[in-house]
Length: 113
Length: 115
Image (cartoon, rainbow over all chains, first blue to last red; front, side):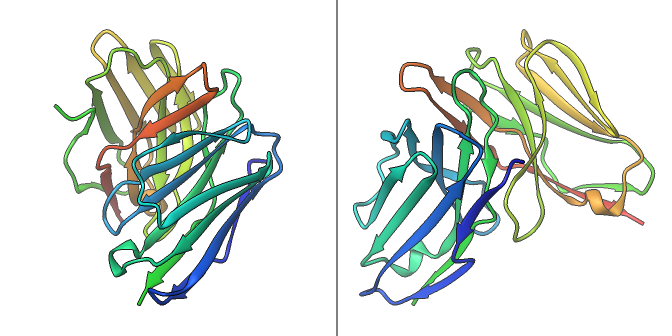
């Protein structure tokens, strides 16, 4: 089973709202990732968590705040977003320990109004 | 120089033909290579991984790797309309110390299989 789940599937939020995206995997993977994908562009890495610790932050604005409560869960907290932040947000996981294939969740389609 | 370059699309092939997708890398350090398929509006799906020089076959898909030339290709035999998608070959960068691995994606190649 290589399933990564993400909720919600769609999210519409105003620029003053606070919302959270959730990602979950039960494959025992030890690395989890957030990507952002704009229309007709490739995914861009935002954050990497390894063994529940933030290991990579690709200079993402502070209005995006990641959290890894445990090895199976990954959250992305959103606050004071801009319309240009509207995109597909993808979560992925990989086993680590020398196994590098990343498996993506279905994504959350975010619209900021 | 871009880290990952893919042959420019869109690529159109008739149903039943062989589709050939190519990818070159500027980073000689990568030891792992992947192909992802992404349907419009969907998330990327891993279809092949290849670590050694040569060919790797999985059903109608064959990945070919030449590390010296920093080149990887994907052949799709007997192409079907359902293969119409964007194909991505990200550059893998590992951080063994942190136990994390990141993928840097190129623009991808859009494949259209014409019935």
